[in-house]
Image (cartoon, rainbow, N blue to C red; front, side):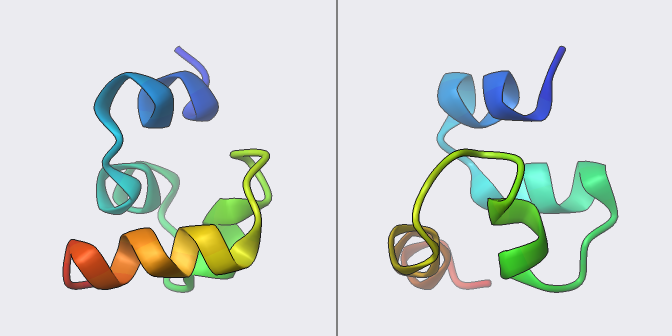
Length: 48
């Protein structure tokens, strides 16, 4: 399963970040096709 598929099915940015081994959200965002601002908003809502 691709990273973007995991995100789209779960909506869980933190899970994607952990699966990819990323320490920064902007690293994860590259794989998702979403804007950094949107990803940061999601991250704030799930307390990353």
